[in-house]
Every structure is written in C-alpha cells, then in structure tokens.
Length: 121
Image (tube, rainbow, N blue to C red; front, top):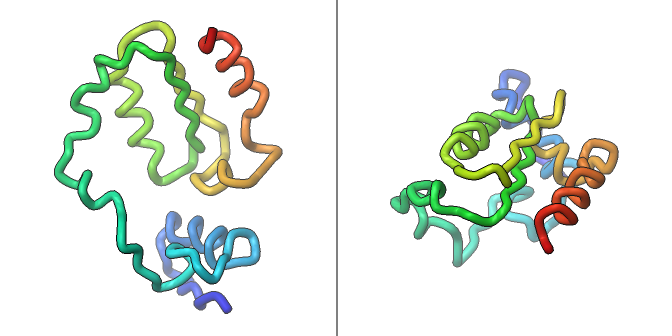
C-alpha cells in the first residue's frame, strides 16, 4: 500500500501524494506511485533551454494550469515569452496541479473544445 505522508511535507508533495499514493492515481507500475526507475526519461532535456525559441511559435497555444499549483509560475513565465494573438493562458481558480489529471468537474473541456474549433481550421 501507499507510503505514509509526513505531516510537515510541503504542499506540492501532499498534492502529488493525494494522486499517486492513493486509490485516485496509484498503480503498481507507476514511477510516481513507487520507487521505480525508468530506463528512458526526459533527462536529456535538462541542459536544453527548452523555452529559448518559444517566441517563434506561430501555432495556436492554449496553456491550462491550476492557479494553486506549485508549478503555476512556470506557465505564467512561459506564456509571457509567447508572441501572437492566438495564445491563451487559462488559470483554473482553486485548482492544484493534479486536479487537471482527473477532476472532471475542474477540467475546462468546453474551453478546450472551443479553442480547437477556433484555431484548428
């Protein structure tokens, strides 16, 4: 079963625990649910300045982030680097990172569909 979460764990650890270490998102083969290791990963991108060319993106971009997510700063910063009027940053009030994994009442399906209809012609 899932590990015990220390009471003084940081907020973002509690957020991930709530998903990966409970019935909500636990899976025996999940790296995030266990102490597993993956033979392939995104480590090759560690030294890549991945947002360096973001101002060159001409395609439509819809960024969706939970307003209370510990990583929300990243989407805010990345969005500022984008150019054009076909870009949108949608912050979901009160949502944390993992709420957008499976909380069907939180995920903005209507806006996603509308964005695709407007921009994928």
